[in-house]
Amino acid sequence: MPADTDGWGDEPTVLIFADREAGKTAALMAARSIGARVIGTEPLDHAIDRLDRQVSVDAVMIELAGAGSLERDRLLDWANHAARAGSAAPLIALPQALVDDVYARIEESRVQLLVDPSVEQRAATLGLLLAQRREALHDHGIEADAERLRRLSEEVARIASALAELSSSARSTGYAALRDGAAVSDAPLDANAVRGLIRVRRLRDQFFSKELFADPAWDMLLDLLAARLERSRVAVSSLCIAAAVPATTALRWIRTLTEHGLFVRSADPEDGRRIFIELSDAAYDSMTAYFQTLQQVGIRLG
Image 1 (tube, helix red, strand yellow):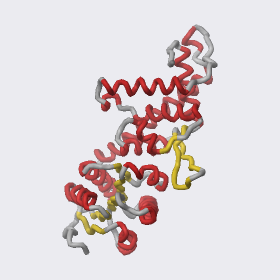
Image 2 (cartoon, helix red, strand yellow; image 1 turned 120 degrees about the vertical axis):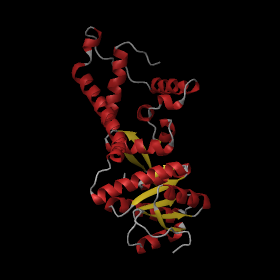
Image 3 (cartoon, helix red, strand yellow; image 1 turned 90 degrees about the horizontal axis):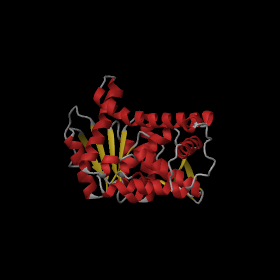
Image 4 (cartoon, one colour; image 1 turned 180 degrees about the vertical axis):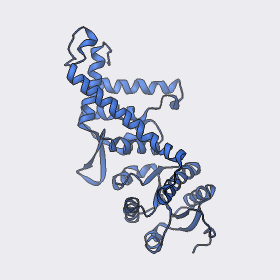
């Protein structure tokens, strides 16, 4: 057992795998700050062997910086399996440059991805994972933690419901009552107009704090709508930039919007290791109905 392993106790257990000292130190600080017991810290090329030998562990922190592609893929496959089986809670810290490769490989939403995280972000996520795992294993409520876990899903469900209702209403009534029986505009939706709206949204950042108007779901919907109209494809890393929030937050939104049927994953036919994100047909219909309704009530986009 490595010399920096913590002593025995009843605390939740954590394994750490890292090649770079900075990542190892940050993971150790995060785990110890929330009272977890670190039962091992090892390099990435020892990870699979150690995990095969490990009888049980609550969480595994994997610092991907510096990993080779083969060991990275093996660890990501392990994380999918562990999350699916519930045998351990995987937390993966990765650099921005690996967003596309990692997201394409991870299939389980319970694998936590943190992009260039701080010690505090590691600690907060690890603490929530361990609380969630303890609740599942011991069947006693931790209501505050459960509530935080539900908020993102509930907010996206609200957005999905609102868009679906808008699309349905637009198709059934044409919003004729809004303008004295006028029909919904048949003018084609213009990608330049959508891009113009995105530029207007970013213009606010020059005058107000970005956090004041942060709306990653809507920003990503707009970006994917414009891309579909332009017949272009959007990589995960590009969509994270369009969200105008930290990449870790953007990835969570992408996952949740995908789970709610607004986004779909599509494979890159030229590179099996990469995926693109697209609007689902239902989301596209809802966005189109929304913009047609704006035109209906006299709001010009371009």
